Image (cartoon, rainbow, N blue to C red; front, side, top):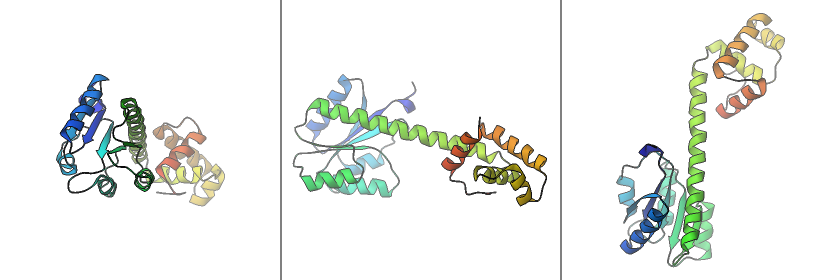
Length: 209
């Protein structure tokens, strides 16, 4: 497996001992990790493209963990976060979870609880990346369609019959069937239902050119 496909756990904690402890735990179960003392160090790093998650201390020098969570979201950096803190409270936990955190653990936490949260976070990120990759592939296929094939596809997935589409476009039903067939083949759709699902993922309006 290339490094780009290897899961990575990023640890951001200003406590060097805690960073070393978590890194040792992750190494013991075969997980790759990188650690940083501040949020700024993490942002400056060159992060690999594979599945990842962030183990983030709430109390950091400079920006705190909850503010950093918001900054990442605003910057379009979508990475599953597991918060760790030495002094958590219920409002803080609720705020973190509402903002999408995977887990909120209070130090000292049980190793297995952290590992469980990390496995869940990595699986969530892996699934998101697969979904995004599939969408990118769909967009590439869609770009191979001609303007008329896109138009026919939009009308087909809106529920119109070939003869209705022919009337709408001022062409023959045979011509519509040809464009429809080309669109199905280029999109690699095995059925109309699959084509409809593809159009939904692409968020295509009916009749889009």
